[in-house]
Length: 329
Image 1 (cartoon, rainbow, N blue to C red):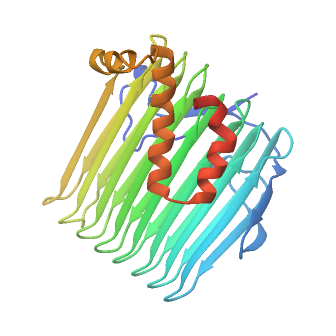
Image 2: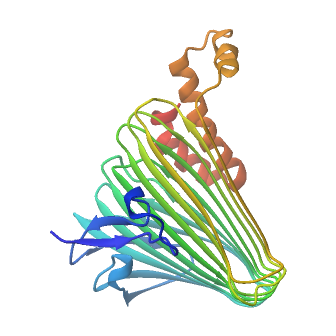
C-alpha cells in the first residue's frame, strides 16, 4: 500500500534527521464521519489528496455575521475503518466567534478545518482530541487572518497509535495576530506528530506558538514550528516555545524550531525546555508519601489541567474528564 506525505516542513533540513515530514498509508475511499453541530449548516464538499480526504465528506459550515458574538460546538465521530469530515469557519468583519470541535474515533479519521477571519474579527478554536488509543487522527487546520483580526487555536492531544496535526496560519492583514497553544500527552507506544507553520505577510503582525506536554513509556513525538517572515512584514514579531517533560528512558523526542526571514525590522525568537523530573521535585513528592510513579501521573494530569484553565469551559472539562481521566488520574 502506498504512502502520502503530510506535515511538510517549509524549509527542509538534513534528510537523515527524518524530520522533514510524516507519512501515512493511503486509504481510499473514506466513509462519511458522523458530524453534529450546533447552529450550523451541514453540507458535502470535495476534498483533496493533500489533506488525506478523498471524494466528498460531511462539512459543518459556521458563519458569524458582522458585530455578532457566537459560540458553536461541533462533534465529529469516526465511522468504519477510515472516515473523514470537515469544518468551515467564516468570521465576518468585527465579529467574535468561539468554536469547540470535539473529535472522537477508534479507527482512522481525517479532519479538515478552514478558518477565514475578516477585518477586526476574533476567532477562538478549541480542538479536543478524544480518540481511543486504537484511533489514528490526521487533522489539518488552515487559517487566513485579515487586518486587525486574531485567531487563537487551543488543542488538547492525548496519545493514540498515530496523531498527526498540521497547522498553517497566514497573517496577510496588517496588525493581525495568531496564537497557538498545544497540550499533549503520549505514552505506551503512542506516536504524535505536530507541525505548525505561520506566514507573516502583513505589517506589524504577531504570532505566538506554545506547546507543553509529557512523554512516557516508549512514546514518540516530533514538533516542528516554523515562523516565516515574508517580504512586506516589517514590524512583525513571532515567538515559539516548547516545554517537554520526559518520564522514562525509552522515549523518542524531537523538536525542530525554525525561523525564516525575508524582511528587515522583524523579531523572531524560539526556545525549548526538555527534561525529566528534577531531584528536588521528586524529593518534594516523596516527602509527602507520593511515589515516583504517582508523581508522574500527577504531572501528566497537570498538562490537562493547564489546558482546561486556558479554555475555561465546563463542557470541555467534563468531556476530558470522562474520556481521559482513567489514563492520567
